[in-house]
Image (cartoon, rainbow, N blue to C red; front, side):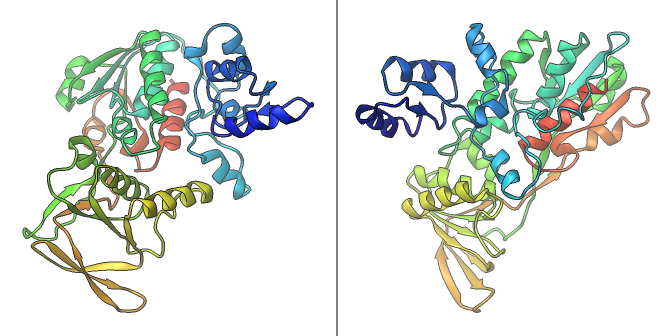
Length: 365
C-alpha cells in the first residue's frame, strides 16, 4: 500500500475513478482502501503473477490460501532483460505449457529430507497427490527462510514461510525433526527419497587474531557485544546481513572483491538497498581485498588504485557463497529407492530455483 496516501489525495480533487496500485498484497488491505474511500478500484500486478487465482480466492473467502507476492522483483528483473516472465513463489508462471503434473498410479512412501522451500514445496505437492509423505528437517521447518525474514525489508518472506507451513498441514504431510542418515533410509525403506538438504556456508580462514562467523550463523544467533563488524562479500547475503547489523546499531563495513556492491539485485531493488545502507552509515568497499588481519583491525587494498587503508574490525562476517550439502544423496545411490536431488543441495542459488525444482520433482512422481 505504498502509494495509497498519494492516491487518497488525488481522489479528493478529481471526478474520474481513481485506481489504487502498489503492494496491495491481500484482500483485507484492498477492502480497507475501498471502505475508507481512498480509491474506487484496486489494481494488482505482481500479486497476480504470484497467484492468478487471487481474486477468486478472495471472493470465495479463501484469502489464507493466496500465494502472496514477496516483492523480490524477480519477475521484473527477467522482463527487463527480455527474458520470459518467471515468479519466485509461483513456479508455473511463464511455464504453464511446460510443467505437467503426472498422475501417480499408486500411492508411494516418500521421504523428503530437508525442510527449506525446495523440500516443503515438493512435500506439499506430493501430499496433495495422495502419496504418504514424511518431511524430515533437522532444525526448524522453513530452513533458511527462517533467516531470510530477519534483515530489514524482508518481512514479507514470512508470508511465504507461513503459506508453506499451512499447505503442508492441509496436505497431510508428516513433519519429523530429525537428521536423516543412510542407515535411516535403509531401515525405513521408502519408495522415493527427495534430498533437499541445502548448502553450507563457504569458509575462509583469516587466522586466530580476529573472531570469524558465517552470515547464516550471525543471523541465527544475533550479534554479540562487539561494535565493529566487517562483512566479507557484497552479494545479497552480505548486503542484507550488513543492514541487519546496522539496524542493531553496529558499525559495519562491506568488503567486496568484485566491481560493485549488490550487483545481483534488480536495479530498483539495488538502488533502494544502497540508499538504506548509506543512510545506515554502512561503508561499502568494492574492488577491495583484505591484505592482512590483526587484533581489532584489517588492512585492505583497492585493486584499481592500489590504495591501502585500515578498517577497525572486531568480527569478520563471512558471506562468500555456499557449497552444496549432498552427502546423504551420494550415500543412498546404492540403495533401491528412487532418489532426487533438488534446491541448494544440487547447486546453491535462490528461492525461485528451489521452489521450481521442488515442483518439478514432485510433478514427476
